[in-house]
Structures are given as structure tokens and as C-alpha cells.
Amino acid sequence: MLGLITKDHRKLFWLLAGLAGMLIVLLSGPFADLSVQGQRVLAILTFAVIVWISEAISYPLSAIAIIVFIILFLGFAPAGGAGAGLLGTGKAIPLALSGFTNSGWVLVAAGLFLAAIILETGLEKRMALTILKVVGMKTNNLILGMIVAMFVFAIFMPSATARAATLTPIALGLIEALKVNRHGGVAKGLLLSIALSSSLSGIGVLSGVAQNPLTVSFIEKVTGKGVTWLEWFIYSQPFAIALAIVAYFLITRMIKFEFQEVPGGKEIVSKELQDLGPMTRPEKKVLFILMATIVFWATEAIHKLDANTVSIIAVMVLLSPVIGVTDWRSVAKKVDLGTMLLFGSGISLGELLLKTGAATWMAKNSLGAIGVTTMSPLFIMISISIALVVIRLAFSSSTSATAALIPTILGFLLSATSPNLPIAGMTLVSSYILLFACILPVNSPQTMIPYGTGIFESKDMIRLALPLTVIGVLLWLLFYVTYWRWLGIV
Image (tube, rainbow, N blue to C red; front, side, top):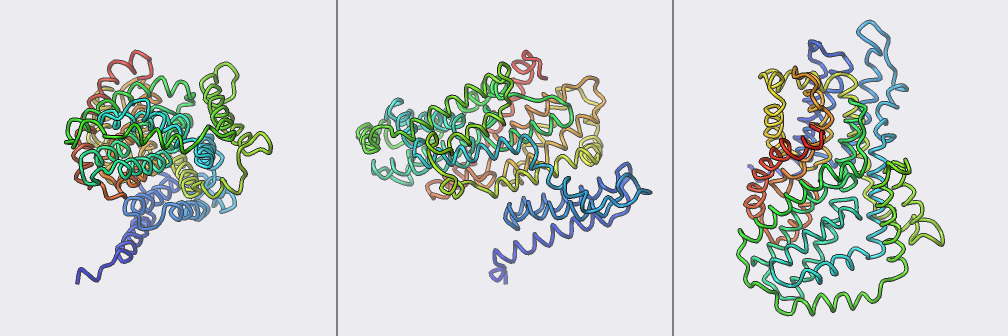
């Protein structure tokens, strides 16, 4: 009987569960201290979380559904209270699409185009092979090379999924060329280093993953405080590097390698680079423009051009005739429009959670109900870290997790009784947990790419990711009471 339950049946069940959950919240009696609009946004969030966790429908389709539900539910909700007239669907459309005019969405969209342009020229393969050649062919150095490459790519390639998709074939090519056992320790180490560092590398760079601009946009909406590219780098990169060091030691100590140095590896990498030939004109152009982009990102305080504007200009230049390196038609095929849809709808939903008071209401009736809001800032952060690690297990995307959880954290901190809480800084550093607490391969798309090779199993990743998460939380708390406090952000 159980054999008759197919994957499609399970997806249909969870889709119906999401719709049912939404209707239950929607049709329940008025919630105390929550507006009609807030209750309806909460109903949409219920649907979104269920379909995001279960993957009952694709992320792009869930994004479209969220937009439609916002338009319908808020359009037929009172405009300013129980006695007011209806808002109207025409006025609800800008609310549903507000995420697509958000500065965070602009940075992610531009980042996806930059990543696609890099992949179009093949510059990423030359960079990865050069790093491997520099670090050498000792097994431990190969693992280090993969992690270093991932961190370097985080600056040049603003997409964790693109980084994983770039390095995975290179690792497979090395395994094949070196005739390494696909199920041996070396092969597992290479692919697991990609799986773990793909997320960690995004912590230290504002443009490194989609969730970072999303977090900043929510913080700015509530506190009015923005975060520049350089500020994010200063706050986050030391912590990201510390986590990468932990990951390196876990991989090299907990996996038994067949040999300590790859026989013939140096020659193979040199041949791969030789086969690529000298750096092409498009590669040189991309490298120059990317370096200039990074310089402009880091010097925002001087020229006053924000990171979003700089990114748009970089994309325009790279796609322009004569001075550019490719055309729109070629790049558009490589850009993940689904991620752009999910990101935009997620921002819209998050902003409405904050605007309608639904985020604060959730916080008061969850962590606030057990007295966490009355604790000291340190114990508040400990509670948040534990809650995020546990809840993160349910999500298969850090972007969807951020859209659902960061507004709740902001609402929770707003409702806390401790005076003068540094809400912006506490929320910012809390977002890091959503990236390093990826214990299962299904917890993020970027880890699914190396996992899809079949070289390592879920248990192999859990064996490394679980201690990494535990140590990561302890490191996070250490940074909270030292480095971040010294910087004055918490």
C-alpha cells in the first residue's frame, strides 16, 4: 500500500496541507493585538513555510503564489482598521511587488548576472586551477585549495550555487584524471569541502549569497541603518575564515585519506592550465572590471555610489558592445530567474510581516511567551542561536529561511524589554547562523550539487556538519562577546 504513495502524491499532500494551514489562519477568529492585514499576511507565511520546507511546489511557483495571495488577501482587507473600506487589489499590487524595487533585490539580480558572465568566459576554471597549482598536490592542500577557491570566488562570483556548480566539475575532473577511488577518502574530502565551504564562503561578503542583502534590507526597513559592502566584510569575514579553518581541520582529521600526496597531480593541473591556453581578451576584461567593481564596493564612503548601483554599472559595461564580453541573449540563459522571483517575493512578504506587525506578534507569542524577551542581551542571543539552528533544519534554502525568520527576529528584538538593544547588529550576526547551520545536504541548493555526484552520502556530511555547527555556535558566541562588541555593533 505504501508503495502506491508516489513522490507526486506526497507533493500534492503537502500542497493541500499548505493551503489548509493558510485557510485555518485566515478564517480563524480575530487574533488579539493583530490587525486583519497582519493576520492575512501570517496566513500567507504559513502557506509559504509549508511549501518551502516540503518542496511541494517549485520555488518560482511558490513566489508567484505568494504574490497572488498578497494581492487578493490584502486587496480585500480593511485599508486601515476594522471600520475602514477595503484596500483594493489595485493598491495591493505595489505591496506584493515591493520586494522587486528593494535595493537588496537589485544587488542579488546584478550578482546573478555577474556570475553568469564569469561562467560565460570560463575565467572561473582558470582561477580554480591556478589556486590548486599554488597550494600544491598534498591531499590536505587540495582540500585547502578547494576552500580557498570558494572564498575567492565569493568575492568575484555572487552566487553560492554558481560557486558549487563551478568547483564540483573541477573536483570530478581531478578525481577522474588522477584515477582516485570515487568512494575513497580523497574523493569524499574534495566534494565535502565544496559542500561545506559553499555556504561558509558567503558569510563574509555582502554580495556572496542572496540572503545577505535580504537581511540588510529588513534591518534598514526597521532601524533605518544600512550596511555597506566594506562594513559587512569587516564584520563578517573574520568569522567566516574562523569557520573555514574549523571545516578544514574537521575534514582533514575525520576523513582517512588513501595517500598524503596525489601522484602526478601537479602535472595534471599544469596540463589543464596549459590546455586552456593564454588568458583570452574577454577573460582579461572580466577580471579587470570585476577588480574595479570590488574596489568601488569597498570605497563607497568616498564616492557615495552604493553597492547596488556599482553592480548594475558593472553588468551594463560587461554586456555593452565593444567594451563588453558577451551579449544579453547568451547570459540570460544562464541566469536563475527562479531565484530572482523567490527573492523578490520573499522581501515583499518579509516587509509586510514587519509593516503589519505580524512579525512582532509572532515573536511575542513564541519566544516572548516563555520569557526570553526579559533576559539579558547575551541570553537572548543564546536563545536565538539555538532556535535558528533547530528551525534551519526544516528549510532547504537559506533565502527562504531568511525571508521567514529574520523579520521574526526583528519583531522579537523590538518586543524585548532590555533597554537600548543594538537591534541592527544583533539581527545581522544572527543571519550568519542560517548559513553555517546546514547539517543536511537538502538544507541548501549549493550542497545538493556536490551531493548529487554520489561520492558522499548524507551520513558523511552529517558527521562533519554537526560538529561544525556546534563549534560554529560556540565561535559565534565568542565573537559576540569579543570582536563584534569591540566593533560596537552588538
